[in-house]
Length: 180
Length: 180
Image (tube, rainbow over all chains, first blue to last red; front, side, top):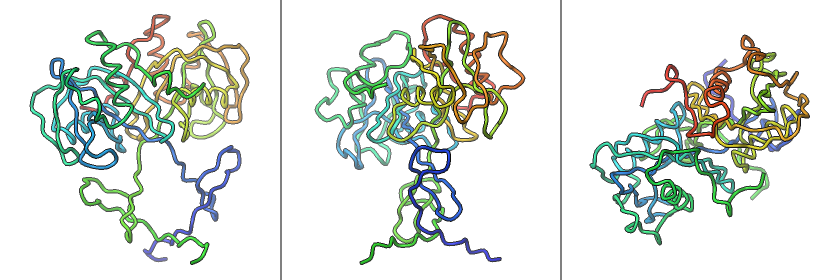
């Protein structure tokens, strides 16, 4: 017996018994390291009718504008994650109103949960991953410098609903919907 | 040069520069293997007013009843995953109506997306992970043999809404809501 962990050998891609997909497996013991889609949580966060956007200080899409959003962490709820991201990226404190949209970005195996939120204070400032942050009226949004398609989708969904109560969340636009 | 991949050494838990959490890292090159919550997709699937349930043939909670649901796979949309699970577990074909609920099970780092759906055919049969499947009127549901709390939550949410249009999705019950 020793404290040194056994050195891991290379894993292999194989179909476990009873499964129907290639998985990442240990060739010795059959352990399966499942790989699954990741969850992005974020928000369309409003101060009156202005929308909080962050200019990315990091790749991908450095220099472009995005919603405060990022990967959900282990051990947090979707709502906690959306609030954390708004703080990390824009030093903004929010109150969530409900789910505005749920997008499936299958190309990169990502599910995005986008909330509608209100800033509880007008104070904002760039966090470490943002070069700049701002509150934009609809006509002031830097449309040519938006980081990701799903930012457009989220903003469009917000525009559709306006101040009405949130109904069932929006999903991918028809042109970008994986077939069922 | 050789075709043999370099043997991977043990990874370490460390906080990468600019991060604030312990991550699984390669001690040599600094590669970070992020660990993130997993997504479960499922449905409250109805034939008239009866609800499709599956008796689990596998652990955990073997022998208990659950909704057709399971882990979202890489490269599929949330909707595709919910339909696939209904087929895999109950050989059921569904049409999704919208999101009934989004639950955060932080103890096991799981986000559950539960749809309301209609069976497009009354034909159902146990798939490999189910010992039995059935369509249950509300009063026939095997309440004492339900596999997971979130199955109760989903059924309760369905009961609350009834046949009304789906509004914003339900979330964890108050007693089980992680603080914000």
